[in-house]
Length: 609
Picture 1 (cartoon, rainbow, N blue to C red):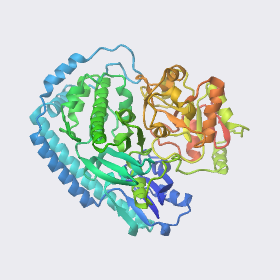
Picture 2: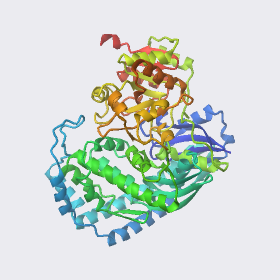
Picture 3: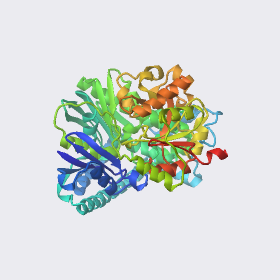
Picture 4: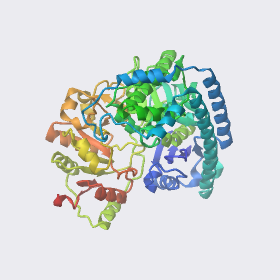
């Protein structure tokens, strides 16, 4: 059975072609359109999938879409908010102002600079009028209740209109390609649960999904056994950990759908205890359930961002996310007597939370679906529909995107009149030049599926310089307090990272952080964040031989088995897809050298530096 999976059109639209439970092709539309988190029908990605797999439209058995009809989604939204109103009417949190006053006494003055902030205790000040409104709308009980009701009603209206809009666009796009009659819909969290479990390779596992919103839910928990998932419980919207994190991301000045990872990086500089109890006072927890009071009212987090240091606000939200998720998962681990956890949903892009879940007592194995956000939902539902039964090995790799021939690469280089040559041993050349201090971009093989650059569309540099975060982030026009991630030879994993056991395979896809060993901190300080953790990619020779050889050659030269690996893209653009994208980003991104296909190219500006 061959199924085309299409992820939700509202953001990160992605097309996947799956046959009998095996992913043949998967890529996001943004890589072709060059529009970050592309919303809309993924026509280019679909056509690329059909072309790469030599599939005719008539050969497709179904088109999988992980949302219900718009009117069914509207009914679930209405039920969700009715339940939320009943919860709010009966929940009595403690008064906020005494808690906030106590929190202010816990704030410490900082003098050490935090690169990317104007000063270490920087606050998001907005002026007297706005800040007074934030206090009323976010802290004062009567006003905050009215504001929350307003935001909930507005969210519901917008969501229904958007579901209706995207349904029309989906049906029009499929009709244009002659595929409309084969559309199969399903509720959203089924797709997350399916991709997490079916791709994990585990016989028996706790299946956890956490996101912002999906078919009336913000999360689910199930039991995966023998190739099937049975749902045990759900987290109702708007009691959403995803929405909780979106609020603080927005309030700290970032885009909620795009920059949540920056809050993770910023949080490591702050003290989570300053505001921890303030946030936990808004949560009703217990017996494997979770409800969050006034969760869609952004003005509390705006008040906190104006009143407290940004780093402390970020740290508190990150810690509370970890606490609430860990309590939820721990309850269901004990109840099901499972030892393995699989995760999917946009919240599971939070690599620090994933580390905390992996470190829970009794967890022997953790797998995070590599495209954990909504971009992976089309694949999840397609896997569900085509699964032949039983349990299979986990993904060998996720190089599911397009590949380009040497002739296509040469044409892109010649178009820009770039000098290039073909070294006898490209991996050794790359390693030598990185060891000498060059920043090298690598473009090779099939493009990675999902949000992470996994070596085939990556920028590589050595990690020996602690200050590289400042100058290389500036060169790439990226936020300075964000850490770079390392890539490490599989054979050296235990000497570089702690508590890896059971998550080694997940670490091949950069989906968790780990505490770094003394060796890693000493040899590769640029890849170790201020909290002593790193988000590694482990590389096995049998998965990506040429990439592994670069690490091996670099280790021969330096004695260090790790490099910095960051995504190959221009600022606020998607990761490069085609050779032309790579050449443009190479020239505009001020990168020293480019290893593209079998060719080596040095930046013509390099000689002038």
